[in-house]
Length: 261
Ligand code: T3D
Image 1 (tube, protein in one colour):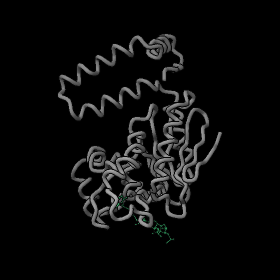
Image 2 (cartoon, protein in one colour):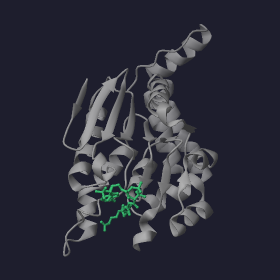
Image 3 (cartoon, helix red, strand yellow):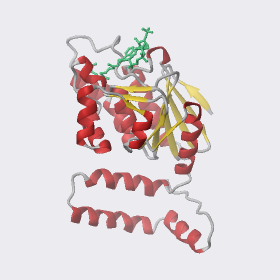
Image 4 (cartoon, protein in one colour):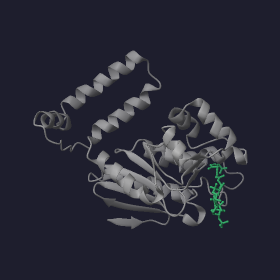
């Protein structure tokens, strides 16, 4: 199944929903319409029980060039109100998606396009990928959550370096720094990413989601609070079908078949 809105493509195969930013003439630069359609596409994946992983990518030679600088908010519109309404829901939807989300980054991910990739659980980088915090080049601060997500992904010193200099992180460096799970030849990006996503789709969806929630919450908790929170979740999961299946499969020396959503 494969469909497109004006700016975003959506296709499902083998339990993996692939969401494609489709403004290649502008390197998939972000507009209010595109972000609304991205939010709808993530919601659609969330609502489809057959979907167990998502891949986000860009059409053409780039992933996303950030805010469309030829279609900015007009003067007089408050950027806080406007982008909290129009952009935050799409980024928040990616970060809280019911299933794991992988960004397959082809070519450039610049400005808020880099932030979009960071909002995903995993990044796979093409060899030609360039992650650029281009905000400082136009005298802005990183946004769409970049100041929250990038230091957590690569550490404060490296984050400040790429944010303040605008120096690109290449695909191989992204892998070396742990920003990307892998850097693969351009021609293999989608096949590699789909295969990665299919492995996640065969994994225990609910346990993976609870893992993400715990890891994110750990930022604000003490060790002892977090220790207890893990056990509260464990109490729920131990009684759920997936965990029973996982233990049975181990004892019977066969692959587990997970079904919990
Ligand atoms: O004020 C606010 O709106 C707040 C929000 C801020 C959020 C942000 O994301 S700020 C950061 C915005 N993004 C940028 O500053 C990146 C601008 N683009 C570039 O620096 C370069 O295009 C790239 C490094 C991304 C890629 O360079 P290159 O040489 O591979 O491609 P190119 O030739 O520059 O671009 C190809 C086409 O895409 C070109 O169109 P044309 O001239 O052939 O018709 C170019 O204008 C267009 N394009 C690239 N980036 C954008 C864009 N069009 C609109 N907006 C863009 N961001």
